[in-house]
Image (cartoon, rainbow over the protein chains, first blue to last red):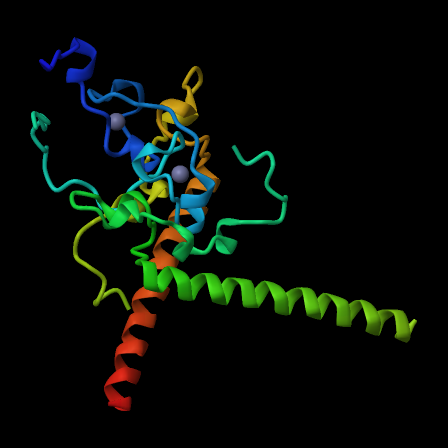
Length: 73
Length: 73
Length: 73
Ligand SMILES: [Zn+2]
Ligand SMILES: [Zn+2]
């Protein structure tokens, strides 16, 4: 299958906003995806992992702009 | 998805050993997608035990307090 | 007391109070452009504290465990 890149998807999800807070607000160049916090993850563990429909905010910030990963396997 | 779960059950009551496949152990899995606060399976199990123990103690204390206040009044 | 904390800054070290003007408080601003997960300034601060506290507790327990097992061997 060929990877089709939607222009929308080229804008990366904001790593700060996905952790809960981004000081740039509406002026941010990254995409702010609004989610609800996963209660289980908040308590410490969610068996749904990356499939969970609620947010699992990560702790560490990415060190630098990671390049767009293409999963072509 | 939680609608048919008893209200007082939490993720602390879920036995991590009850998962047939532990997706967080699979190659390529990111354990922080599943565990918050740097928990690992081991530390999470210990933490749940402590949480449940504390809850049990608190509810016992509640019973004792209730008993005492009934008998002091 | 912070000397043995990892040098890496996390989002939870950002002091909301250090913002001279809080743009999310300005008239017409939408707080959800800045805070995800329905956080407000207050709940966000509480959340950051929980993150830092949980992680500190867990890393202390690791040290105690390591100490005990070292001394039991
Ligand atoms: Zn942002
Ligand atoms: Zn979840």
